[in-house]
Amino acid sequence: MFKYNYAVKQMLLLVFLLGLSGLTACRTAPPLPPLNLAEAGWSTHQGQAVWRSKKGAPEISGELILATHTDGRNFVQFTKTPLPFVVAQSSTNTWQVLFVPNNKTYSGHGQPPARLVWLQLPRCLAGIAPPKPWSWQRLENHGWRLENRLSGELLEGYFTE
Image (cartoon, rainbow, N blue to C red; front, side, top):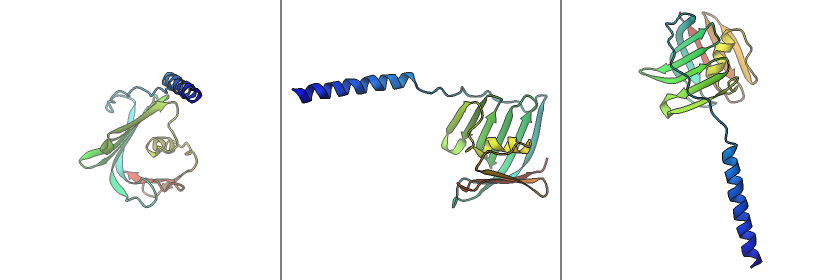
């Protein structure tokens, strides 16, 4: 009888804790609205880039579009023809990254996480040093390199416009 009462109490405690955890769930940011890069205030750059997601991963080359707005919004799109591969947006207080092949979207409030290279690029190009463990380097012919030496992730490219 004692073991039965103890098991029932444990089960009720577990149900109670699960109920509480539902009340403390984090809220992700709502999807950011589509952008009109032809709208006044946008500065757009196009070029080529190579991305490696981690040490030992294959390098993927593609086209890169980066746009910045005077109000602090940023847009980055990496395309492996014919489809976008990564689409990233940020504003002064929200961010969102869509990995198209996996149909995965990550978003949040505040500054973007350091691990998202796509949202670090506009900041680096604006002269803001990247967070650790990222390193930023300007290269010849309008080139640049953003690398995480710990994970091996790399984004290297240049802009033609």
